[in-house]
Length: 334
Image 1: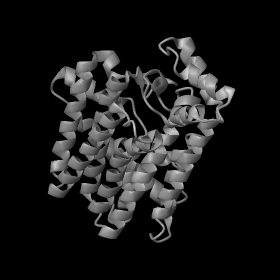
Image 2: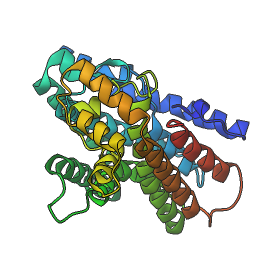
Image 3: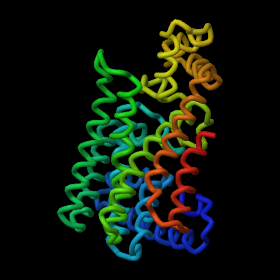
Image 4: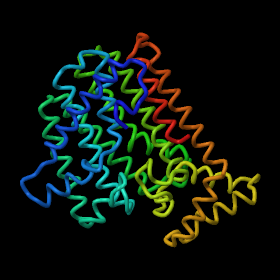
């Protein structure tokens, strides 16, 4: 998703964002370059594969609420995307994901150890860039990194016996996805010189829209053919990574009103999904099950909650762009 991929009513704003996103892209390529040939190839792998550039785009958009021309805004956009790319190298190893952004995942090309170390290298480059933005930015980045790690940890370990599985999952999404998107919004407004009240608003917007984004991604994992998401459909199911449709299905199947369709879908979900036919069967059953529509509705609900946070902002092209941004994220799952 680039600036031009979001249908903005204001042509001038759209062109400004697109031009600045091009600067971010150039800076990203410079930031991942290494004198070491292996490190260079592995670091460029996901940058060259493209991607939505959602986080830097949000940084640039929130900066429009202040002075979006400041150099620090571009640096902040580079930081959040480098951080995101680093997490993808790690996530794909942990989830055994074979494909990322339509290309083989790095661990499929170079192995797990190289993929993990490449993610570490990108974190180092993000840290070097954020250091130039000052102590407050470093503190924010460190707090975000901590939340990213905690989210992955809690996803890996799973909920406690006395913990609601859906609520646990939403907290994981808040940390794993919402935290970095919130920081993307926060840094853009902060380095554009916005007042603290505005910085607080857009940070909360980012947190909520990040959760909506991941819920929409859960739907895409089942309903897409992989061309939109860049991932193999059903990857999360195969690797037993919790998703909202699967959690809602388990709740339904355990309830007194469980239907035969609920039980059949759960049995398919719990089968040996290393077999391609078994995975395809499970995806097909879940794809038409009501839990997918329930998850889509939850994504829409979160997106609306995110937009409600921005109500105090003045009306205009930038506020309208936030609506388009939120709609574009949720519409991916439609």
